[in-house]
Image (tube, rainbow over all chains, first blue to last red; front, side, top):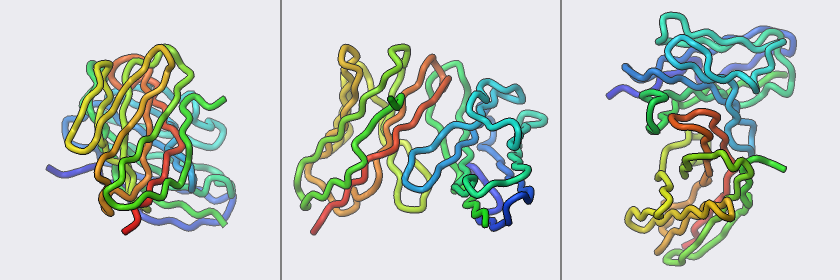
Length: 115
Length: 111
C-alpha cells in the first residue's frame, strides 16, 4: 500500500518569499492533517481536514498560512510571506476518518529552511 | 502549562534495561491516547494505542491513569534499536479531533 506522499522533501527560501507544499494522502483516507515540527519539539497541528472540509485550523497562522484540500484528496499548504521562524519540518498525515479512532500515517515531511 | 508534557530526556540506558516514560495531559476532555515513535529525521510512526485497562505489545506496556491524567510507556529488555524519540499524543473527542502531541522523550540505548 502506498504511503502518504509529500513534496518537495527539502526547500530553502529567503524570508518574505512564498512557498507551497503538496500532500497526497493514502487512498481512501478521509482525514488529512498538516503539522509543523520545529527542531526539538513535538509536531504541532496546523490544520485538519475531514474530506474537503476544515475540522480544526485554530493553530494556523492565517495571516500567512493557507491550506486547501480540493476534491477531498490532495492538499496544499502555502506560506506567504515566509518568516525565519517558519523554518521547520512540515508533516502531512492521513487517517481513515473521524468516526472512530484510527492510526494516523505520516509522510516523510518537507524540511523548510527560511534564510 | 503545556497541554501534553513530557520529560525531554535524554534517557541513556544500557541494553537490557527497563525504562519508563510518563506523560501528563491537562485537558480532562481527552478521550484517547497514543504513543508514537520518531527516529532522527524521520516521520512519527504509531507505536501503540493506550487503553484504560492498559495494554501490552511484546516488550512495550502502556498504561493510562485518568484520575491523575497521565499515561506511561514501559520498555523492557531495551534494544539498541529502541533508541528514538517517543511522542505522547492526547486526543479530545473521538476520531482524532483536537490532536495534541507532547514534545517527546529521547531514549538512547547504550551497548
